[in-house]
Length: 298
Image 1: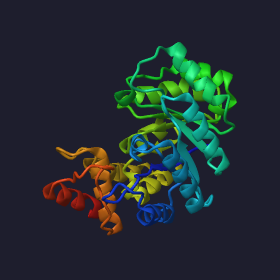
Image 2: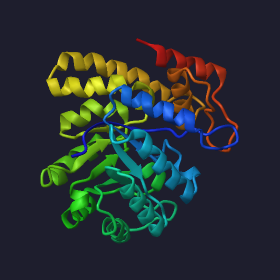
Image 3: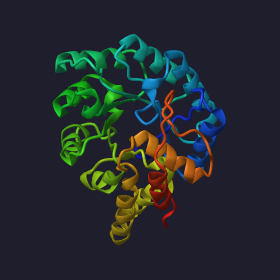
Image 4: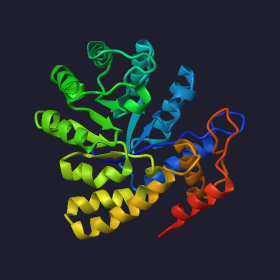
């Protein structure tokens, strides 16, 4: 079963837009040493939208070699092109991935019948557990509990996969737990926002795939383990720390990917390129100093 604290890892490119193998390996090693349960590549924070199909395949191979089964590997394979999504899922399977994260088709809006068809075709072409990715602010498509249950009823790899819900609605977590997880206990209900880790677990979910774990893996892993121990007094203290690190996500005049890359550069004490691929944009010095205070806070 997929449970715990997972990192939707950033992808680091140099100033020319080339894959920075050294820095990407460095952050993977840091996450593993910090006790992360698994790493999710080619997600939103990982700039999957900025890579060609061949580059994605090479990155899957690189991540698999580097992780070497020390923690779980989840591969983002979503694409508006179904054949590409299937090919990426097959590549993930070949390279020892533990699951695939599949976002619904974006840009052109489909009804539930066709979204069902999209996920069905992919599910029928991979043996890997499928985590459905609900991020309507980006895709303009909300995955309803009825749709997800219908998919889980038909496909074992979805029933044994799960959902990543990146919405501010904790009611979604509750509905997926009550309507899907109650029938399929191995169906993982994961939140995509770090500050929801404790609420997610309290509702009956299984953890997070959260951006701030790129720099705060130890804190979130400690929180998860503290919940399992039932130390609720300590959880209140940890929630306050988590609330504080969320300020990185909400930096003024900054993109979440930029601020996360900047935070990772500070945490690793590494001067890698923090811009989105092919752009020469950085956070301002003022924002960088604010991020530094958050990252270095005890």
